[in-house]
Image 1 (cartoon, one colour):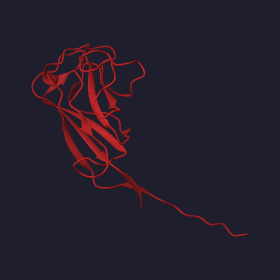
Image 2 (cartoon, rainbow, N blue to C red):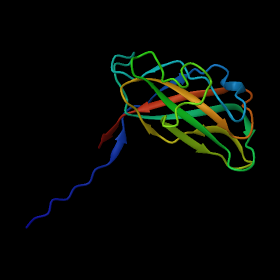
Image 3 (cartoon, one colour):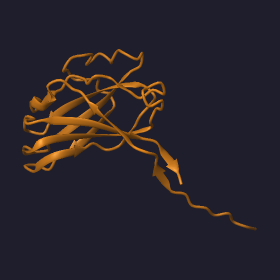
Image 4 (spheres, rainbow, N blue to C red):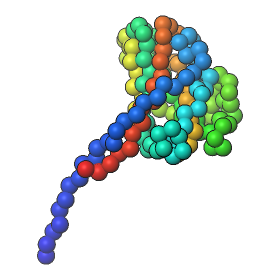
Amino acid sequence: MSVLAFTYREQNDTQVSDTVTIASLSTLASAAYSAPSTLVDNTPTNARGLSYTKGLLRLSFSAALTAGTGAPYIAAYALKAMDGSTLPNPPGATAAAPSPNAYQVIWQAVASGAFSVVDFPPFDLDPQQYGFQIYNNSGVAFSGTATLTLYRWNPKLA
């Protein structure tokens, strides 16, 4: 009897990045939801001619902020515009809580710790139009300049 053994490594194709535009993100109060972003096209007919299967959101601040006490966190919601233009309602186009079952990723802050770059855990993407929304439960209002960037890639076997 023979045994066939093999190993494989997963690596990533070339990564791309896009700025995600959310109105008033730089002044988002603590315990508040942002409005959804403008749509990000992850369909095969986008400007890159390719949809991506993995994503990571990075929230960057021009100056460090200090989280509040307790269990501070920031949540990012990935809202799909299934028809290519309309986000689910709630939140629709407003700064309101999304449906309780909306896809979200959470970044847990260190209580009373400083932060200036927040990487939300990687998540799966479908070939859809996406709107992103932020919930700030960090215990401090955002200030300075806040920038949200979506990094996307496709894993491949090496």
